[in-house]
Image 1 (cartoon, rainbow, N blue to C red):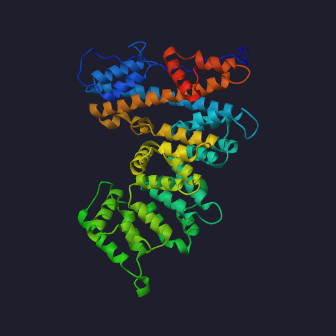
Image 2 (cartoon, rainbow, N blue to C red):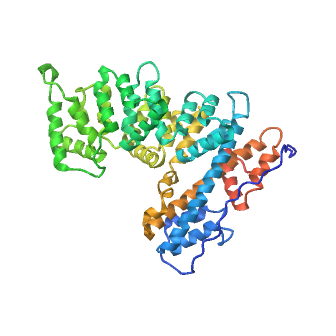
Image 3 (spheres, rainbow, N blue to C red):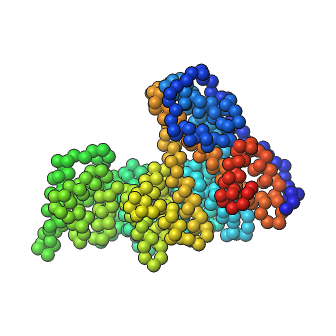
Length: 493
């Protein structure tokens, strides 16, 4: 292949550098295993010299984790450095998406590149990309991608690009937007998240539609679903117990009350009190509900889920059952149910996968493997094998968010002063910042792989793209690109 396809001058990539952190050369016994792993991963910066910024941060973390001044300086500068990388990646990703959708006729785009950019990022990073895309092209990225994709693959991409809060608003619209209301979708949504997250989603929905979500759900969930509606509204607005509150005496009384309710028979004119049960389970914390289920089973030799069966409507029973489980267990159970039957329920699959990120994704993956004795990504691959872009998008999303780095922003974007000058807390934050830094570098690697592939495939070589991807990287970073390229396409770079 030739190298005569240059169409424009190559623009130098932004260089984000920091001067090394200056620390005294004093030995310390503290050197955590996590930092040692990071040091081996930072091959693009730490190996050439101990005077690079990241190398000096690693050195400071290992030798001076008890020094408040040094830990504060490291956190401040690495947080700023990572934020610069995030903004750079957002702009590069926005440009890559535009190149991907311009790659063919309308409805035809470079899907591999699109997936590499949009399905290997955290939800927080994707929000930066969406903002950068709008600033660069004055278009809504989610609508653009929706127009270029379709079916379950398109739905997966759309849910993945939603923010944590807008995902809740999107699912409510999807559940209630057609003829009738999909009550099972609402059950999944309100069991899947805690009250704080649901309330934030409520605010997004109301801002979007300029109306009350409470009024909307009252209209959509008619008389037949009045008990489910009451439970959903309680979960949305009633204060819940603190997550670590488990009052054994209170739960014992609740177990006795539930036993009395589940022994009632409508035929004898003694109706089951759905409102009382709903009030009880909606206010309890997840931990309290799990303990309540154990107390009930131990005392009455029957599971609470079984006792409630047949006493109320099916959807209402599903919601009550979900509240008695750990959220991650419930999601794992629903994913397994989607895999059963003659065909996989892909709408359920992509709806759940697109809403997972951070610790929730890690918890679901662990719960699924514990419950069903197979990794979640293996199960997904088996169920959608051969479905091209859909398979690639789901597996890329799962693998990216199942890594511990996916939830690091919970610790990296906090105010450094909130740690009150405590060295252990600052050191923990620095650990998260170092892990996040490596994840950001891997973001760039994944994009470089697709840019290089696009530049060299076909009858000619796009010199501009190739030079931009190769000439602006050092040898150590290119080693990472080479490894990833071979893994993605089965041939050496």
